[in-house]
Image: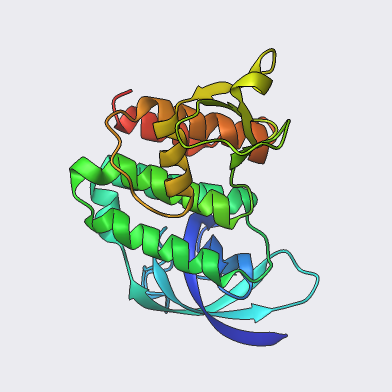
Length: 247
């Protein structure tokens, strides 16, 4: 049994029995890991009550090969991110990013994903409320791209021709890309005006863009994930976030 100390983000935390907790962690080199924190709910636990979602720390893991549940031996706190819990929209946005990572991540090393999610959670804590929705959307699309599911927006997936900047296209959720106007006829998809396609490309690159209206962008994100990433399912956090946004 090897002991490994690694930076870790807590994506999920729930009680196990009367005294322990099960955590889902994201680490740079070990990917997503499920661990048990034995005795974490005891009043004098050495974990000190810091094992909350979105917390960032140095986790010491006892790793056993061929086991789905590893043992958390220690967790040194680096950042709590408690402010995310003080605002429903910020909490909902952070939950969306965490759930997306849990549903699509693996145990493979992915330091870029770790850095992107850590930076996104920091950003959600501090971003002004007027830019909050656009920030959540941008960070979600950034994670989609880092996980390898970014939509193909520059070329028609049917004829292969380049989509011009001023050209309307149609997003085929299941195929994961766009069709030009000529190839879109008779096929499923959502009309994607030039400005929306440009915004989608920028957000996939991690850029926060000004969005006069966000309803259509939320719909595109949810349907794209359901069709192309989650095999028809949806993320529970979408429902919570929609309620927090008053939709």
